[in-house]
Length: 605
Image 1 (tube, helix red, strand yellow):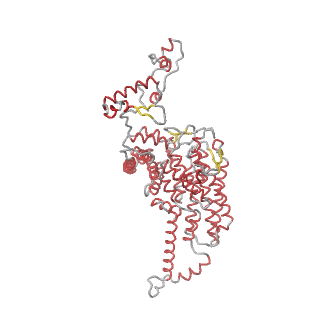
Image 2 (cartoon, rainbow, N blue to C red; image 1 turned 60 degrees about the horizontal axis):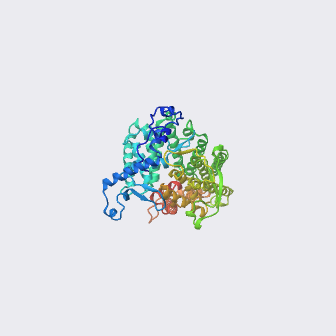
Image 3 (cartoon, helix red, strand yellow; image 1 turned 135 degrees about the vertical axis):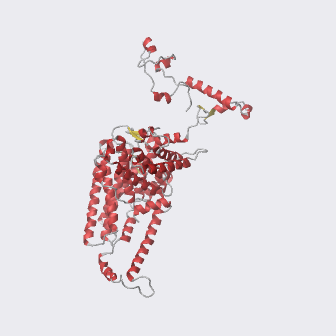
C-alpha cells in the first residue's frame, strides 16, 4: 500500500470534472448549477481505504522520492552506476512490469498487525440472523477496552501467538511478546476473579476463553492441561453470573461459546458435563438446529462419563449385565437422534457433493489435499463444523456400544458380536463423511470457482474471505482427532488425516494440531483393554474372593511382609501399572507431555 496524497471529500462528479466541490449535502451546488445528477459522497471508511487516480499517485510518489533523497543522501555505489536516489525509492518485481514504491518509515506496531491478523483469521462475524459466528462478541467489546485491561492482554497474547506461528520478522520475537501478554493477562485475570463484581463481567469471561485459545494456538508442554483448567474456570464464571446474562446479546454469545468449549472438553476428557443438559440449553438458543446438535453432544458426553465410571466399579453379575445392556440401548437411542438430526437439517444447512477425486500426487497421502473419494461443499464452514460435531458424537456412541458389549461377553472376543459389526459399519460411514468435509474447510474450493457458486452466510471481521483461515483449522482439529484414533480408520486414511493435522499446525498456526497428529490412540480397543484391567472379577471368581477374604486378617507367611490377600492385590496393582504404562507409551508416541496428559484423559487411565 502506498500513500496517495490527502483524500478529497468532494462528490464523485466534481472529482471527475476536477473542480472544487462545496461538499453541500445531500447534493452539492456545483452539480445543481450544471444540472448534473450528484452521485453523492464517499463513505468515511472508503476515504481511508481507496484507489486514487494515477495522477494523484504520481504526485505522492514524487514527493516521497524527494523526501527520501533529502533524508538519506546519494549512495556512492548508486551514483557510480547512475541510479542515484531513485534506486532507493523504486523496486522492480522480476515477475511483473509494475513498479512499486517503497515508502520509508512506514512502521506498523506488531500489536496492531497482530490484531488485524487475528480478526481476519479467528473472529467470524455472522452476516445474517442466527448464531453463525465465532468470538464475534470481541468486535464490540474490544472497542471499549483500555490498553492495559486483562481482556486486552489476553487478546494480544492470542493475536501475537497466532501471527508468530505464521510469519517471522527480523528483530521481532512474536512468541516472547505473546508470552509476556499472556502472563499479564493471567495475573490481572486472577486479581479480577477475586473481586465479587469484576469476576462476573463479560470482559473477564471473554478473557478466560481467550486464555484457553492461547493454549491451543501455542501448544506448550502442558497446554492441553491448562486449556482444560481455563474451560472449567469459564464454566464456573457462567454459573456465578446466573441466567440474567442471557438477556444481553454479548452475554448470550459468551454463554454459547462456553457451552461449545465445555462440550469439547467433556468429549475429550471423558468427564461428565458440569451441570445438566437442561441447565445448559434452557433459554440459551440462538440457532435451533445448532442447539439441537449440542443437546446430542451433551447427552453423548454424559453417557460416556457414566460408562467409564461404571466400568471401574461394577462386578460382572447378572444384574449388572442387564445394566450394561440398558446402556447399549441408551447409546443406540442417542445415535438415532444424531441420525435424525443429520437427515432433517434445514434446507440451508445441506451439503452437496461437488467432485470425486481419485488422484494422490506422488502417492503420498500425507501431502494430498483431498483423500480419494467424494468432496462435499457446505453453505459455510460454521455449519460444516456443527455437522462434524454431530458425527463425532456418533463415533463416540459406537465406541460405547462396543465397550459395553465387550464387558458383557468377556472373555469371548468382542469382535464376534453383532454390536461390533454394526458399530464398524457406522464408523466407516461417519469417517468417510468427515473426511469428505475436510477439503472445504481447508480451502480446496477457493481456487476452483467453476466447481460451485459460493453463497457465504458469514465472513471474517477483517481481511479477505478468499484465503484459508486459522479458524477453519481450529474447527477441524477435534473431528480429525476422532477419525485418527478410530480402530476402523484405514492406514491410508490415517496417513492423510495426520498430514491434514500437520498442515493445520504448520500452515494455519494452530499448533496443538501438531501434538494431536503424534498421538497413536486407538479406540475402542485401547478403552476395552483398559476396562479389562480395572474390571471386577468374573462371576465364577467369587469363590476365590471368599477364600481369600478369610486370609485378610491372617498373619503373613514366614519370609513375606504381606498376607496372601495383600500379595494378590499387590500383584494385580503391579500388572495394572505395567499394562497402563504400556498403553500410554503406545498412545502417546512422540506427542510429549501434553499429549500424554490428553491420552490419559481420553483413555481414563
